[in-house]
Image (tube, rainbow, N blue to C red; front, side):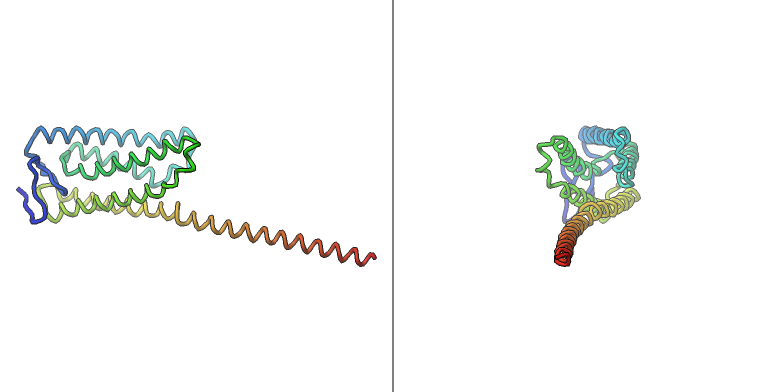
Length: 217
């Protein structure tokens, strides 16, 4: 029994930051394992995105982040399902499933031309993903502070993996939204300058023509 002044073990064998490997109710443990198996299966389906990008020749979408995230999640969850398929993994899997519902809802709506003007919230999906990683690290860190027989090495690995995702997704967010917005502003300012330059040049040309006419007279 793992006790703490801040948490308690529920009657069904799990709490916020951990689920004991020896779950009290075997039936409930089996239900969690089946749900996690379907989550693992969804990672295989999500990795098919890469093959669709290749078939559609959208090579610009096959980034380091895309390949690393999808390939690593598939392999990590294979290890989870073979060695630690207990309820400790439910928290991150639940958050990730919720984020993917939002993400694929966005992609589905973006396929409808009439809906595209209303899809202004793409960057907030990335913000939700970053929030998910921080919350998962928080849960994992709690399990490291109050250990309850879950493999400690796996907890360290999970936090390290979350850090790598935070770095990659933060870089994606900056490149996609921050720098892109800055480039659009520079482009607009440059366009105004070009228009002014063209207008000034045209005015100068008119002055030269007038001067020539005056000389002929």
